[in-house]
Image 1 (cartoon, rainbow, N blue to C red):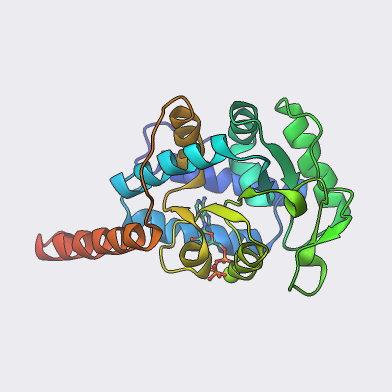
Image 2 (image 1 turned 60 degrees about the horizontal axis):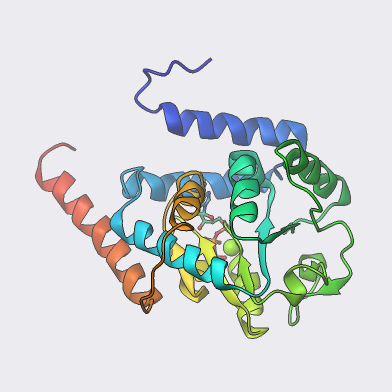
Length: 242
Ligand code: ATP
Ligand code: MG
């Protein structure tokens, strides 16, 4: 048991969820590494939603709500961390959910679908694997014809850069959550929420009830995120806290 009073409570709870996810066969072993990279960037942004992420969540909510056919792509880490949030968001913006894994295995897809169903999801896509993301080789191209393949808007938290790029080339609007403002995924997506997926999803849900209509400049926002990280590091360094 992790005591609530522990200064790193939230962070340790997330680690526990990822660890349990690996044990249950929901998270792929390499998901531990991806989570570690995410943790490092979360540390740098202060482990809370910063204004650039808040605005991106609002922009994402608008695009998801106005989509003709939005699909939320779920991988092992996202399922282990926020299965309930994914289900709520899908309901809120009338999106389909598709389990789509970088390291595809039918057993893991089945387990993630069960977890989502335990959280109230219905008709989760992913098992059928009856279409391919164009321009990608190997199993990671496999997707659902009724899902990602035919969607106009795809929400892919914690996505790989290559797949993000391939989805863009297919003409889709891509929304992602990625704590690393330098990753290819972050730079290729139309809207990048530089925040932890556990905070980003409830935030998008909240914004689904708001009307908002402004242009979105993703690269400008990524610059802001990088500037924020740089000035925070300088501040900590010059305060003598290190
Ligand atoms: P790319 O292929 O886009 O250049 P990458 O190779 O840096 O990305 P991967 O290791 O493939 O990234 O995927 C993990 C990404 O997900 C990292 O950028 C990491 O910061 C991010 N990430 C990991 N855990 C979380 C989380 N809980 N919330 C948000 N982002 C996360
Ligand atoms: Mg990558």
